[in-house]
Image (tube, rainbow, N blue to C red; front, side, top):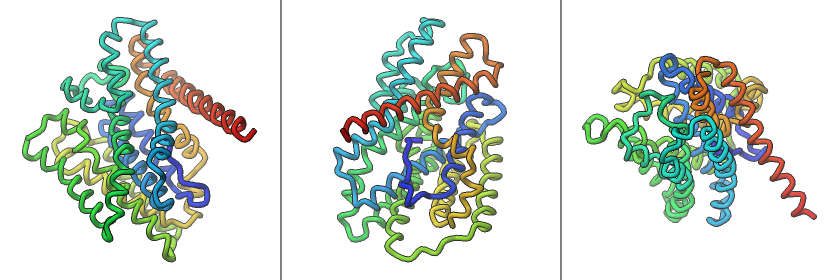
Length: 352
């Protein structure tokens, strides 16, 4: 998600498959929270991929000018987000206007990227009565992602001035990895703070960014590509492990906060790093067409799934899972393609 892509000449094989794994996990968790108890772990994988690609692309370029960087990130994140918010509010208002009481406050927290802290202020429980909370409960993710995107160009410029800047950023990453386990073991934070706080969740983005920075630096040397068979075997092991986690890692389990979330973030970082060294032939399976489809629309699928499920609940259609899935896919593809058309039209006008 975040809609980041490596350039075609530097395409990293397997990321479509990883995005699909993450998207399916989150979607199934939202649709079947009692069955796919740990599907929310897919967000960790999304964070790691986003951090990796952000750092990888920026370090390769030597750093994009900050205004240009922010402009690019704004147009990757906000247009789809704004469209989803506007349409969702209008549709829910038609169904049951009382469900939108005080919605302005929540929407503002999403647009200004502090929704995770807004939810903490409301003592929100992400695992209790999911379908009854709000159409925008899941958007704590976009807030942390935007916070990272705001901080990254400043952090990169700060650390790259030092001779061992990459190592220093690695130390910061390790420190960030310790926050969630220490806070959960000490009992110094509520479950809401453990789950939503930027301090307890930023480590996944930092892990990705640290490894992406390292990978970009390695391109100045000869890189020995991993052969397809080991890549596929390790990827299969990661897939099986992720499925097990998606099935058993309910949010009520203390081990999830003590070590589970951080450990899975490290595994995600290692698998992404491995794929960045994989032989292109590995992509024949890892980037299978259906995975490419899901990956292309993964950001919109994430944005739209909860509003659609929320509206379905209001209409007493919560058991019509196929209908819900079809609507999520249709509006996601529509949203993505409308913006892509506008971008192509704008590019043509500029060329003229």
